[in-house]
Image (cartoon, rainbow, N blue to C red; front, side, top):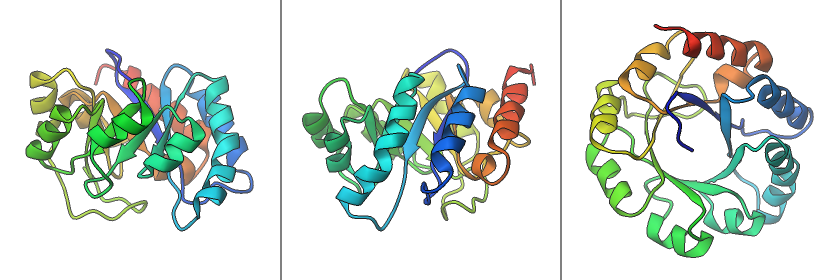
Length: 210
């Protein structure tokens, strides 16, 4: 999950039923070469139901060579043979996740606004670190509000990719890109309207010179 240019890391809405698989297909097709990872994030489902919801979405990602990452749940990631797992600060140790999921798994860690958490994650073998929320988000509440400078600090010192998350839109993402974000994690700005238009708006911003 690393490239010289900033890419889009799609995060699912909590409701992935109904028309959502088709919406995901449209978003990934519009974002070919730009949207390179997708995080499956649902709550309040047992593992069997979560796996049932995940499987068609995982297939859509696999067809397009998009990394399929499970939020929080190492056991579900193992069950699905997912490409990786994203861990919050209370969701387990990256070392343990690595033992369970294997060397090839992509393991990401939420680090909020903490340089210390990020360095710990890197030392524990994480494949990427995520900072945020940079802007107010309707998807997930957060009291942490880092400045873009944390992305610049990280990218200047470490080779591990960094992900910016939280309330990111095509209109406000440029400072995060300029600061060194490798990925923009986006959810509400994609699924809250026309997903193809939103992806195209992000592409236009990311391909501009700022």
